[in-house]
Length: 82
Figure 1 (cartoon, one colour):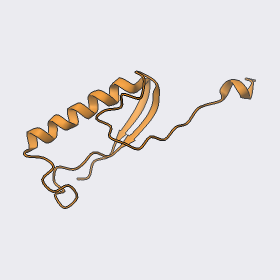
Figure 2 (tube, one colour; figure 1 turned 180 degrees about the vertical axis):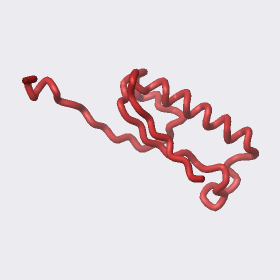
Figure 3 (tube, helix red, strand yellow; figure 1 turned 90 degrees about the vertical axis):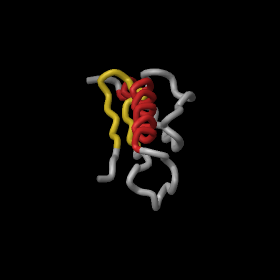
Figure 4 (tube, helix red, strand yellow; figure 1 turned 60 degrees about the vertical axis):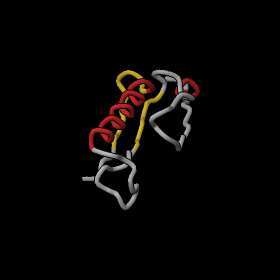
């Protein structure tokens, strides 16, 4: 049976903008849960996006940054409102 001390983990909750997570090293995160702004929810973010292409560009930037920090074989959850 493994020693309990060797199974210790470190947990840190970061609340911020997932388009720039420069404070996090590459491949070090085991779980990401995020909810981007919604293109079709102007009541939440009025005038945030000029058009749908700009919105998709933001999602691409988010995805690139999420994959950068995510450890190999780990999971990220992207919550979308439909």
